[in-house]
Length: 305
Image 1: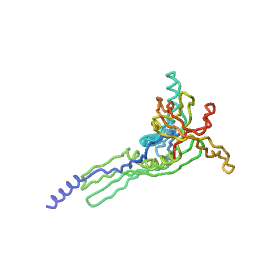
Image 2: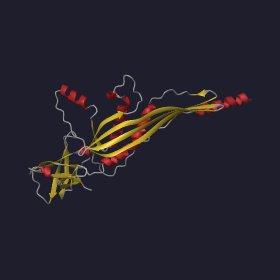
Image 3: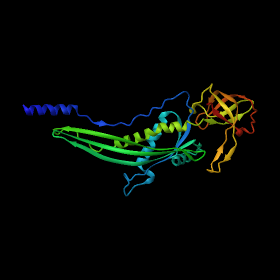
Image 4: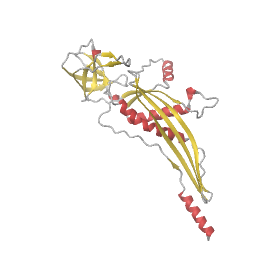
């Protein structure tokens, strides 16, 4: 009778056995109205830990660093708030462009992200009972991010986050699964750490007002830079601002641009262009000041607060 009871218990435990994986949370960013996309480049993402650095380690082709860069790129792209610019493989792209006898047209970023994996480790945790045993694989990772304003070189956001992932297997009376090394736990731990930083990156990049410039100003048409890929649509209204005076802060050595003057508005009529770098918008102007077509650099177009 006792053997029968133990057999039933073992069978029940086996039926209920499951593999548990801690998934990285999905970052959800709420969109309020139209999104004017910023141009963002990921400068580098390096592995600063000692993990997987053997005799033949190649710093330029570190798999963990490239993995983290791809995860960050995917999360930023999924937010729908950025025009992502390629930097890590830019040399390869330019080389291919030259082979095809084409002219490369690269554009500058508003912000650059620099990141690194600062901690990474694995451990096994086990529990042994009279009739049951449990084994848990745990992976922990820490990621550091710096967000740099390209126009000034100033770091506007810097932070570090940690993520973890685990896989648990259980056996009862020797009946159950035995999980081997699971390489996907590394992906999940790094992804979780990066996911905690993405929303802050988005908030910092969108804190400042989006702006652009006049491309053409004459009797036939008035054009500004930027189009559909940056979230511009017909009917949108932007302020026309004059460039403020630039002064040097003797305390920090940083050039400071003082606030300009609002001299009118532009209303988008239609957009055109095939790629982000060639896009433009036709606008109509309502201005209290004459726009000098020979000195358009004096003015810029800014998102309405």
